[in-house]
Image (cartoon, rainbow, N blue to C red):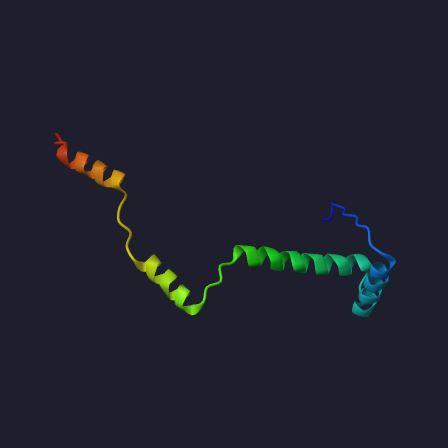
Length: 89
């Protein structure tokens, strides 16, 4: 459901160009503008959310993910404390 509205100001040259382009595409001006704006917005958002690495960086990144990380020092300390406590049954 479309429940929002946007407005913009444009020159007569820009308007004429958009009207012609929409006609060539066989859609309304609103549909033309919305389709182009959404496509551009999706591409921009994707570009900012995606990580692009060259091949050597990709291999290094994956190697780091595959390496086991050392446990946090707090976890090691808690384990030492737990082992030192005698469990009574």
